[in-house]
Length: 180
Image (tube, rainbow, N blue to C red; front, side, top):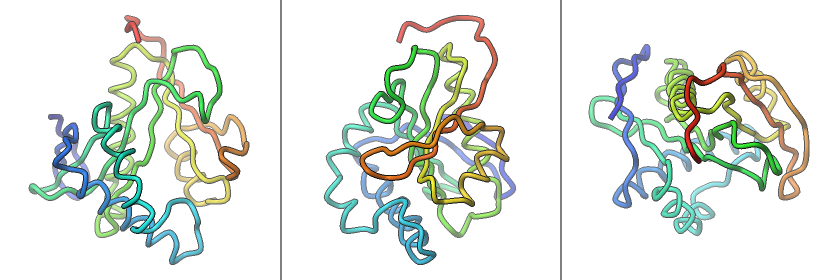
């Protein structure tokens, strides 16, 4: 477990377990519902995520994390060590951040930014020089958010038929190289 400081308070980040599936879905669905209410078709509301529980179980076996504030789950994110389906074949020099979602009640408290920095630290500690992420290319506010966090737009492309913006951030050369 790691602890990170945010304007909301001290947040604990833990690896998710199979018992956390409903918490992860709840956070993502809350954010998806909010996005849809603003006409942003980036994620899907509850009924589609319910059908994707097997995906979440697979992610839990990997690098799916939950963030807690005062014992309550408030955010989630995934770190992957490859992402050929979105980024194509790339050298093993990056970690890929996916599905960063923060409960709306915590919006504006730098929880998302703190989790990005935390994930970048995990990626760099694994010997990677880049953090990469993607989002729906038409979500202009989210694209601007990632750019304000130091990410550079690398490419706009189609992934599974959706307009997708690919971003990366150089983390510096690593002192060691992990064997992933």
